[in-house]
Amino acid sequence: VKEKVQNSVATTLNAVVSLNLGATNGSNGSGGPVTVNHDGSITTRGNDGLVLQVAANYGGRWDIVQAARRLAEKAAAGEISPAAIDDAAFAGELATAGLPEPDLFIRTGGEQRISNFLLWQCAYTEFYFCDTLWPDFDAAAYREALADFGRRQRRFGHTGAQLQDVVKSRV
Image (cartoon, rainbow, N blue to C red; front, side, top):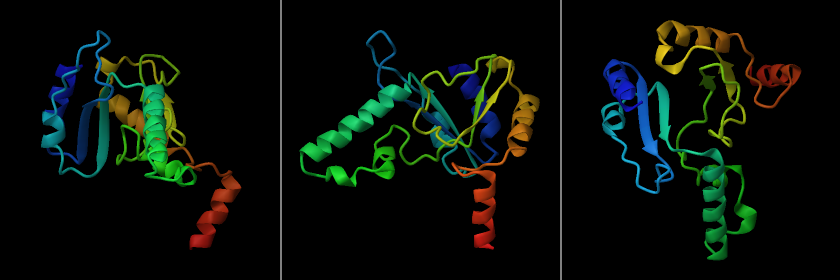
């Protein structure tokens, strides 16, 4: 994966893609630390169009538990009131704090599950599943996923009629 990501960084340098690399829970499964090369993040930092987040050894349940634990510790220490804990406060404690929630989640390899990935952040994410394996997922496959995404109506918890009412009220 590291080699594939490093090769992709060269392609993204002249694009608007911002690449974020990070290990979140500090474990590689054997108890040792995970080493992640952040060169891609530094190199693409100024790009402001699309964010490609690559997380090594990340787990959505772990992320939620860590966020809850940090908020509980802050509340116990009197730093915040339990009543102040809302969606925004919770999201601010996640490993992805400060990053936009994903608009599109592409799952390759024929799998149709999110496998404990970005459980909180995917509340209003559109999902695209394909049989193409990750190493073979090329520009044409990406365009196909984007075309599918473009045919969808993003409603963010509203019905189609409610969304039309919201749009009309803003015009």
